[in-house]
Image 1 (tube, rainbow, N blue to C red):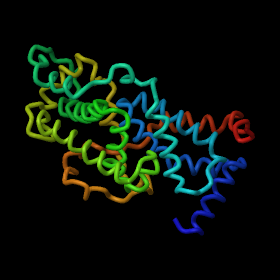
Image 2 (image 1 turned 135 degrees about the vertical axis):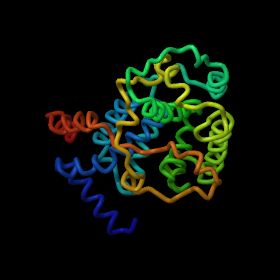
Image 3 (image 1 turned 90 degrees about the vertical axis):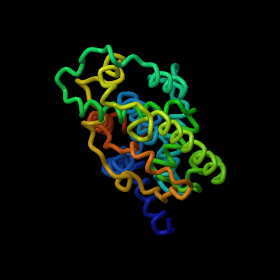
Length: 283
């Protein structure tokens, strides 16, 4: 970022810190989808991602006066979000994280044949797509928090290794090495077991009723297939493709970005409209 742009950004942040509500709303609008998608992949469910997104955006607001333009605003928000999410303990998988061994065993030995029709008249193709997105997202929970974060930053957001290293407080070389190892681990598992992204026997359409029975998807609450997809380019300006690290990009097409849910946007707007905002801005 050149000096003029840095000064313009700092002036804009200063306006928001001083109480300019429009400036603050603009800053939030620019990062809320990014924060939601990072939270969704780190935590595994829409509900948990919504809660964490609100926490992170409020933390961003309360720490806004500490932004000094040493990095891009997006990088600064990424750092806040990553630190929050790596230590987040309120989500579904915090105390019962799945493993690749558990996932593989369930695919090999799960009894999917004797389950009755539980689709509640919802189209099976739609439920299969919901399961595909949910399954691959939850699969990320098999990685430790640091590896999961590296995978998401490098695969979904395609963040430059220098910037990713700055966000994670590791060297660019360490980031590239860990990203390559993690992507290979994910690709190997998908290749072995998944019939959607690899040569495995697992087919989402065959497992829909089994997934409903085990509360993995809900026919009456389709999060992924009802969410509005967006492009990475509209979500963040911290982008410098890292696909040259390996040739695995085709294996990770499930990393689709979504708009932050309207419910989350409404809650943040309600906060901005409340008297709490003026108290925080004076703190």
